[in-house]
Length: 352
Ligand code: MRU
Image 1 (cartoon, helix red, strand yellow):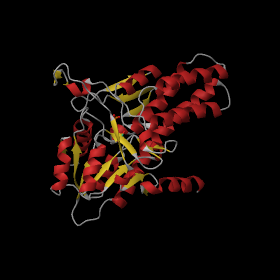
Image 2 (cartoon, protein in one colour):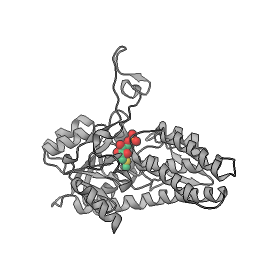
Image 3 (cartoon, helix red, strand yellow):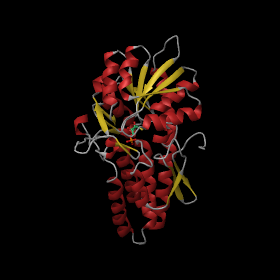
């Protein structure tokens, strides 16, 4: 049974503990990670997944890799740390938090004076700070979400896609953080969770988190969202993000774009909830966001059951891009920002 609240990545007794998200909801298992290579594999196989969570995991992976380096020569140490970074960078291409965390760890290593032992100690502290900051950031996102959700006489019925919950972050969640805050504030009637084919993060993980906390959740298949909106069952949509381009175009789990289109057609507000570390200002628009393609077996089979005939071909993009014009606001730890204001708001935050 899980501890409540849920923390998917924990540093304990000189190793990282990961909740194995491939086993939920049926089995709650924790995997011990001692080495950078094991962390890279855990990210690739989605034992840990969700943009902020893989950022935190990669930060610990950098420390584990640093710890494995034998040399006491600073120059050689930094060169070998680049090799660790290269391996971790190659795990998953879309979520920018992964690259953000690895770059921050590398920068910290280069900027820390002293011997190799001191650099290693600072790297562990930095990974722990990234971890703790993410939980706080998610709580702030949740609170800011309350200020933009529709104010209406009745309680809210929110739709979410994939899992942008505690499991996808260091804790609390982004989109599900907004749901949690609405629940705590007494403003939530229920959350509708798209099942999220092909890996079913909504059915397995979002529903699991909600059930853990007693938040009323209704799981629907992805093709039911339009029907629910047409029937007036949804007041707002809140999703997470894997990478947001400078113009506000947002990559998130495959199927998010369809949800945004039908929300627009029904005049339902569509919110993206994400920390600033998910915004990639080096990328001008969503067409330049790298989209991960995963193995076709995620489509043609469920467990050991084969669903499709031999001879069929498959296309399995893990993410899609929702254009900024379909997004009502991006809810960050600094408040809700209209996509068009993203660059100017960040500029003012940097200069503040
Ligand atoms: O492939 P996944 O499960 O890592 O994809 C996760 C998502 O798309 C989430 O919505 C996104 O990472 C935001 S998590 C706060």
